[in-house]
Image (cartoon, rainbow, N blue to C red):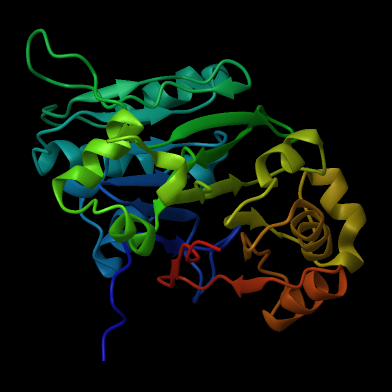
Amino acid sequence: MKTPLSARELVVLGTASQVPTRHRNHNGYALRWDTETLLFDPGEGTQRQMLFAGISAHQLTRVCVTHFHGDHSLGLAGVIQRISLDRVPHPVVFHYPASGQEFFDRLRLATSYRQTAHLQPRPVRDEGELDASVPEDGPGQAPARAGFTLSAHRLSHPVESFGYRLVEPDGRRMLPERLAAHGIAGPEVRLLQREGELRGVRLEEVSEPRRGQRFAFVMDTRLCPGVYALAEGCDLLVIESTFLDRDAALAEEYGHLTAGQAGAVAAGSGVRHLVLTHFSQRYGDPAEFAGEARAAGFQGELTVAEDLARVPVPRRA
């Protein structure tokens, strides 16, 4: 029996760190968010993993690269060429550290191919909100606004690295019993939502606040302010846990987190669902990562990522 598709879900394409294993491909993560699909950190083999996961080039709307180490970016060459080969008709936005522009350019033109893709490079130069508008091809058309804000925060790694945070705007949940009491139904509901008042009935009287959902993607980094800024209040946090706590000194030296550190960050930041990933090949038992995250105090939903797993964004609280 197939698992039903969620309109908002993380599709894990790869979970290895620097060295892939027989069971773990290099990094790669696709976030399906309503009409958009965001591809994060496509390492080697991402194009093939997309095939296994049922993610097509036509679904991609933007690609976010945290930094230009190979296990997070070498798959760009194949993904970009596939976008052209499949003649994806819409523009695809690319976010990546501006300091790595030469690497992006090399990967984009790694080999000869027929370039038909509409690529929109938007390099990240500093922390803050990014341009998340959806470009339009037609003459005179204004870019469409995305249904979320996308921001970047600086991380601590030997090369410049940014994590990404996606936030849906807060809204209001309509309350059917209160709408019925005021005789408001059908198209009038949308009119009330748009105008804020209808026949003397205010929107606040027939609805309640609805918190927007939040997602963050945190890859190679030591503990730093950016990690906490990204994780704060997330419904779904994808975070590297390259090392176990017994190797914390190695994690610090090479600019990584341990499973315990990731669990502590999630616990202190009010994360609802924690996804651990980016595992060193030196470890054999995935349960150890979950155990250390739990020991650090995280009590929410926890996933130790496996290749080709699908993780739904949690239902609204």
